[in-house]
Amino acid sequence: MPKILLALTSHGELGDTGRTTGFYVPEAAHPYRVFTEAGYEVSFASVKGGEPPRDGVDPGDEEIARFLTEQADRLASTPAAGELDPAEYRAVLFVGGHGTMWDFPGSEEFARLAAAVYESGSVVAGVCHGPAGLVNVRLGDGTYLVDGKEVSAFTNEEEDAVGLSAVVPFSLETRLRERGARFTKGPDFAEHAVADGRLVTGQNPASAARVAELVIAELERASDPGGDARVPVA
Image 1 (cartoon, one colour):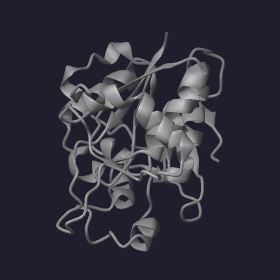
Image 2 (image 1 turned 90 degrees about the vertical axis):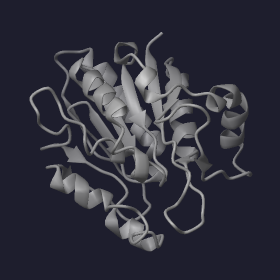
Image 3 (image 1 turned 90 degrees about the horizontal axis):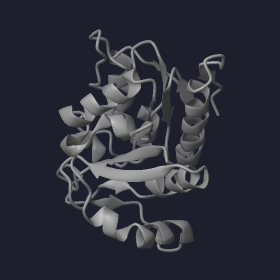
């Protein structure tokens, strides 16, 4: 069965605010459903391994509650990024959550895995703050993965709106632009996702399921040499 990896942060402190953070659970739960319903096997890994910290849990959301219950054992003991074989995966999705801003950019293991997955002809994706895992990914020719590609992520305006622009270690939108990305965005907190050359990204939590759908479309397109390499934004 084709396998897709959900990459999770191991960072649980929201700067010096005294608040906790982690991976944003809806951004894992909703893609998990889309992938499994399409017949893909989904696995999890985190930067350091073990149980990654969580954020965004809505006790009233039945889909999230089911996801956390059914995946409790696997989420309690995720492998570390350095333990993974990129050849096992048809796609990797960097799940968001503010914690990613601290540890995804410095994870050389996840960066190497993403580059290997992409250069094997498979798909690399990120949603919301998850593209923090893409900012330092370089391909074999030395170029940044995002250079020249349409990319979306949590925007500067959205970071301002949640009051965390001065807390996060850098501006994700700005950093992606500095890496050469052609940044694309929609209205604040509205669904917006784009696929460009087997790189799929989404702007915010509302975009998570759409990102998963575009990943599947790109996997199908990659297996069809006559397919169009670009999927329209949503």
